[in-house]
Image (cartoon, rainbow, N blue to C red; front, top):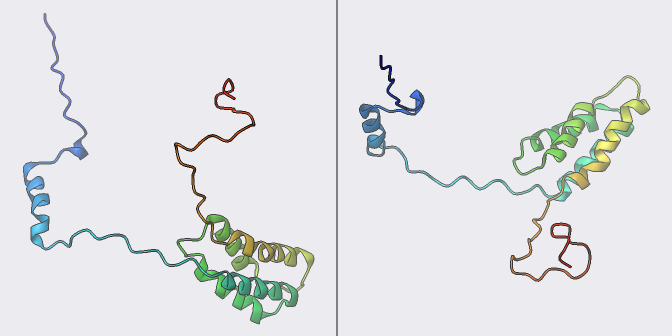
Length: 154
């Protein structure tokens, strides 16, 4: 007895489309669908003065332990958390400011230290990183030093 099984590979079901589905997809531009547009330009990077003022207000919150500077520090840090151009390390620092800048019963070292640390690092962590230009592919290699990729070449 010959038991042969035909080998067919129809492909995954979710990738197959029927003729009516293809016709519907082809007619979409005719039904008034808008053409594709370029992605909107991201907002500009916040100025360093904005981070500096947040830093000073956060330090005042840490020092004074009163509602006015703490509320202001949280309200200034909050919208920056959603900024698309800020790096994750900056957002982590902003999150620390947002969470820790609250009035406490005692202005202890344990309360002040995380707030001060976040405030001190804010201007360094939240600055615009300029792209470093890459050397051209045909640029001459630098002289001297070890060539770890090809150790036999020097």
